[in-house]
Length: 396
Image (cartoon, rainbow, N blue to C red; front, side):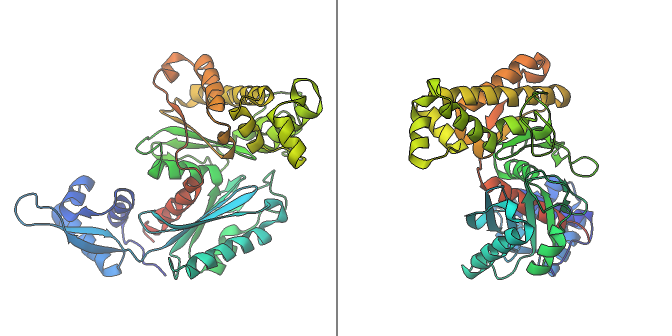
């Protein structure tokens, strides 16, 4: 089992090296506010455990040159980001650099056992590729509500058969390492915070639009999960009391109107109803494949299909209305929009921005950037690795 830091100071050193990379002993000690003698004792203990190593001599600041220290290059973490229709699995080092990354289509409705068979098979392929012969920890993202302290999903609307499945215990036993589980959008937020568009932003919202819709809420640099882990479940905020039925059992939820499946449903209905939708790019795609997807809507909008553009404008406006309420309540410094549906492009972003800037008070929106996520599918696996390193780099 991987050694753990003995105290909070050692944990602070490990996390600083994770987030900022190798550093000289002198500069690292100064940045953490530790006395040189205290810092030297803690680093020497970490060197003995093998969690950190010396990495040559630093540039002289005058006088005796300091050694550079870094996290052990032997540490390996597994990041798993499960979506409704695909799973991403990656191996990272302790500085959360992706060493190898695989993506595979799945259907989470097949249940957790089948899904994690895919995950374990992908993990085996990654070890066979030579990037890891073990894992020091694994982080897992699931597209549904997760009871965070215990690490299992609770009544996830788009995951039949997953309710109460002990993900942490099951996967930890198979992998032989600590496992942590969280909602997928929280991990996306962690990834964008670590290496993406939200780096160095303390308070922000990260909205993921895919088959489902969720929001990661970061407060003071830390993901806010609420009492049990359900904070940010904005996909089930009602936008139309007489609207479409939702997988959660209610009616008119945001997710039922602008999740990936809802967008494909509305595009199909518009084309089949005749009128303006019976011609154009969407109609041609339907004729070729026999069905339509959210990706088809994005591609059609890119070439000016009027039906696709209207679907994006309407759905983006509904998302923007919900985000406007969040902005008024939370007053974030940044809003990040990510997920597969963001392939719809800047038409979606424009519709969201219009509603937020129109509906929220100027004090909340005067300096509020609303931007597309930067990392794409890498965000979830980086966030998953950051989640588990947060545990491994904590005192036992």
